[in-house]
Length: 213
Image (cartoon, rainbow, N blue to C red; front, side):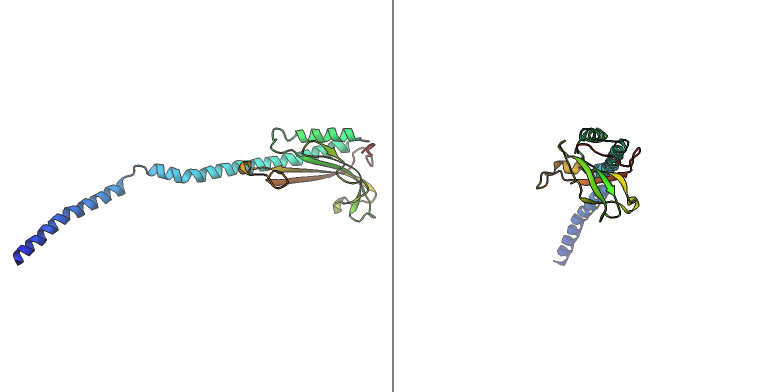
């Protein structure tokens, strides 16, 4: 009986030994097998590379657009302050010229506000609106600011009994990811608000009157 039991154990050991060797060989082959590794690595890296690429493009586009918004404000203010007298039609034409600087970016239209401001030490915030005109995003025009209302003027420009032209440009920059998002409750595009304000003194005269603003 004991001899028979020992022989049975030897046979079982001999049977399991090839199975263990086969398993080890299979594991070694699996470890050495590089088929598909490149595809897996590519699948893992591509989303990150795509994110970096799109992020770089969006940052570059945003910086470029912000420079254009500043150029719109500067150009508009420069054109207005070269006048000795201005009217509503001329102001509206200048604002349309300024908006064209944004070409070919047409994801959003700018809102441009121009105001002639009387600067005096007696004004609470440094300035008082003499005339103003605004171009809305839909291309329509309105006064924008109320004449005779007091308005803020930066300290560096608060020179008593002077005149200054203020131009403010507002634009919403919509990154690529927001193209598929909905608008807010007011129907406005969801994005990054860009605002540039320029203050220029008249070039040729002390103040610039607007005859029908």
